[in-house]
Image (cartoon, rainbow, N blue to C red; front, side):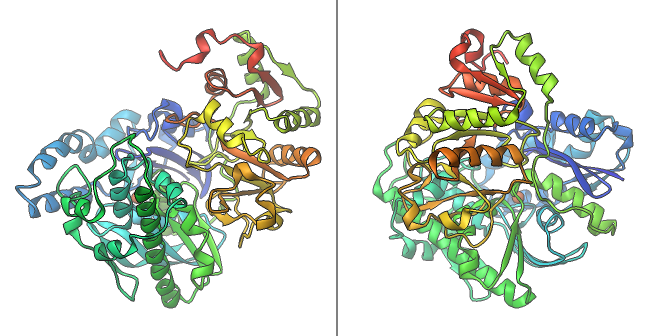
Length: 574
Ligand SMILES: [Fe+2]
């Protein structure tokens, strides 16, 4: 049975194909369209999924859509009506996209894909719940889904057993932890639905001095439910987020690109603290209700890796699984799995052990790309020699793009579309920033560490294959890996086992032989503002347009210096 899952028209459009309950392909549309967080119909991602699954449109048994547009429209209408006439302009502003796209999802799907079969609409938070529990290693688990908002729900808790998911409690719009986080993101001069993780990074530089102020805004009950005081917000009836009262409480808003002061850092730290407290309160109650030690989480707020790293210390849960494409992109996967397992009642057949679900290019294809574009490269018949060479280049403080196999699913690059650098060099964070990423200086870079050694380097409670948990770097190791140790002594690590990604593992082992340290700096292969590279051409263009020194691409080594920049330095015209 073939089920195509689709999420689109809000943020992070994506498609995912499951065959007999197993995921065969999944990708965000942005990777193809090269438009970050692309919200459009994921036509390219769907085309890719069908090609990877070797099926035509008429072989799709069902299409599963990740939410119920009519229900969502009802929420938009009713919240606008409640606040009319204040909401009039926002209402008029939002209507075209509803009338042109969101309410026409079935006809758009049919028309764009020439699809005649059934389309099933799964509720937004059911899709989030399905996206995590149904691909988790657990037969039974408590489930928390938490985001900005779906149709009405912003937070849901429930229980999964076998192929069944029952959602027990929901918190509804406008009371939303995700929208609280986004409001502060906007207040601090960053972009909503894009820069929330910057606020999380900034929080490490601040003191939680404003927690008291936030307690006026969010009321968390003993049972884990919470309510926002809506006097502090206007997102329920305007196109903006914080209200004047919010600004009065915290001081003037930071303008985009303006100076970041200690006050901004303290506000970020206070927000992070209050969000963590709220999540832990929800989770303690969820554990009490389910009496289950396993936890599955999804939704945008589940990407808060700082909070995730503290769950096991602050709640009774013993095991946590978080699906890496936790935001709405993962809704495509969740809708498909929920339909297959929970609605159609099929047994679960799949555990997500890796996330290399995107397009891949074989050695011949890459060789012909390189040759066809007169790119100078060196081919290595002996892969060990290539990985040794790459480790040596990294050890000598070169920045190396590492491109191989199928692209990652979700927002993190985990060794197939990565940029690798020397974590031992205290300058390296600034070097990578200046020459490649151009990120704000307050944002950390992440370490990847071999599975055998992660406990030696990090005070980690679990292995972290998907880079979703921040843990303290052990005090005696912080000086050894300064480029990946955040200001508060933590790191958002990835642990890598040989069988998960042998070449990625091997390059770290080779680096260890040279440096004594089984850790590398790993950041996604892209520059700021662009999606992670997908094709060999994307990767080559990224290298030539930045200060990446070398690229290991499949069995080939390409040096930036050996090649002329000319047409490759810009994305324009593509
Ligand atoms: Fe969501």
